[in-house]
Image (cartoon, rainbow, N blue to C red; front, top):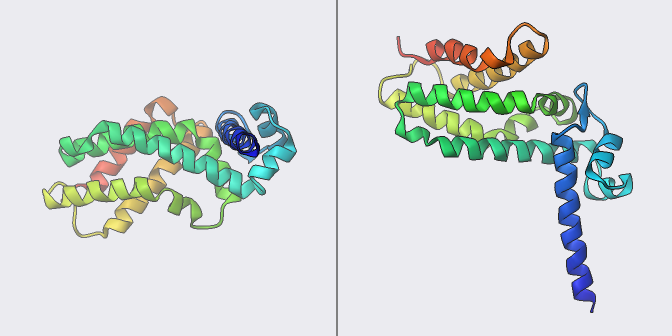
Amino acid sequence: MTEPTTGKRRADAVRNVEAIVEAVLNGGIVGGELNMAAVARLAGVSRVTLYSHFPSRQSLVEAAVDRAIAESEQLVEELRLDLDPPPVALDRFVSSSWRMVDKYHSLYTAATTELPTGRLTALHGPLLGRMRTLILRGRRDGSFRTDLSVDWLVATAFSLMHQAAEEVEAGRLSARKAGSVISATLLPVLRRE
């Protein structure tokens, strides 16, 4: 008799966690700051329930970043970048990634204050790995430069993407044009001279 109740609680807990993370991604961050009361309200749970699943703001932000990155990975996977020449694949990768950075810019802002230094980069590991693979492929076929380290080029791409988000937020760059601006800036940095 206790097993069905336990199973039901587990299903409820899973639903609550999903609702809480969705709430963070869809309005729980205001002005770049995580608002726990707003997250609980949007998720339809009490603050006690929220804190039982996510005992700290950091744990909640990390879960939301993880979800956003998984969504980004899925989009990149669907692009089948391995079928395109590296410069074309890079342009498509940047466009897809930009849409996600723009969509979750408030989350990124909150994550930079809530997560320890380096943790945000670590969470981006799968996407950075895809960029690394793409740059290595471009090096092998002669499209991309070999005089700078791959790690530096990946870090440059990552930084450029997030700098564009800051420029959009400051009103100095159109969100609609940012993806093409990023590609136009990044491709010459990567191309073999």
